[in-house]
Each structure stands twice: as C-alpha cells, then as structure tokens.
Length: 167
Image (tube, rainbow, N blue to C red; front, side, top):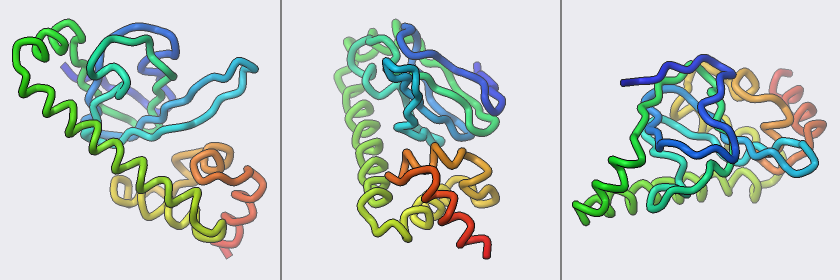
C-alpha cells in the first residue's frame, strides 16, 4: 500500500517511533528541530531510498521530521516484519549494507556542495537535483534558507547567487 503525500505534508515527526519507508516517487526533506526551536535541513531523500537510515538494523525514535518537498509516493515497511526478516534471512543484511552504501555515496556527492568555491555551489546542487527533477529548479523546491543549509552559505549569499543566475 502506497502512501500519497502532497507537498508540505509530514510523514513522521522527530522523536516518534514507527515504521521504515521506501520512497517510490518524489522528494522528501529531513528536518531536525534544534533545542532553540530552529530547524536544520540536513538531508534530502530521493526515489529508491529506504529510510530512516539509522533504524535499518535496530528500532530508534525518528531522528528528525520527514516532509514531502514534492508530491510523493511512499511505501511503508513494517518494522516488525523488517526486523523479523533480518533475523530469518542473513542475506537481508546485504540489502541494508547496499542501502547504507548508496546513502553514503549520495552524502559524498553532496559534500561537494559545501567544499566547492561558493560561486559553484548552487550550480552543483542544481545538477544533482536535475538527476531526479529535471523540470523543477532548486529555488522552486527549497527555500533560500534550506538551499543555504545544504550548500553551506547564508540565505543572503544564496539570494545574491540566485539573482546572478537569473541575469
């Protein structure tokens, strides 16, 4: 059974316990609320990802809140059946290892955003997102604050860079 989420809908909230999910279609953002109440966008989930990543081997409260950036289709994966299948089929751990490897590679790609010269960072983010969303520019998917959090720049710098692109 697929869950259909519309842009802005919350799949789960930080601190809750629940199932795992596989993103079939769409884009999700993972936002952590800090003790002072501010939010930090620290991950984007793309089609094919099994998440939350930190609960693939043992149940943990959700580390952050998952929100649909675009209309998304998400397949719930029951944690009871997931962990039971891990116990019964040791080869299932290979699926976990491959999922974590895939996630690590995505994180490594996105590290380029924050280590590149500042004038290249938004272009790199655009190129990466274009692999999944060719028809939607990054500024239609994310706020300037969120773009800044992903590429390691202030919102003001993001604003200036986006103005340069539009000229």
